[in-house]
Length: 171
Image (cartoon, rainbow, N blue to C red; front, side, top):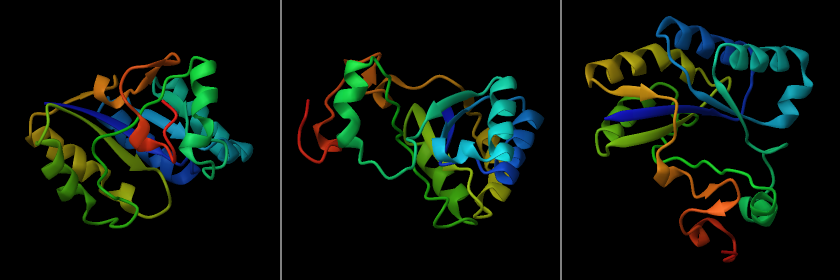
């Protein structure tokens, strides 16, 4: 069983720094999908630069987190972007203490899970060490690559149907 870890909506300097510390203790690499607007703050930009320097991948999670996905689809295709989705969403932002068990129960249901977590100030990332220990107990292989079924658009080329993701079909 493989697990890819991603973090959305940051960087949020103290939380993202904590996540980086935990990942470093376990010698793990992941992807941070950042909200561009957050990079305007020097301390957030510095932690994103740290993440990149430590071998984590940085992806764009929009400029403001307000644009609907379908409104940018044509732009993504025309400019040869890759789009990464997820197949495991433990709702860490809604349940900062209980998300770990939900996620561990979910990742065992498939061969390769792409888990989306959030490096936001909700206290959810305080549970990251416990979650990683649970993955170790499951003998999960934590990888940085993305499962193909979570990449509907690769370098602008449609890899799988996306109509269900758009406000009105634009495939």
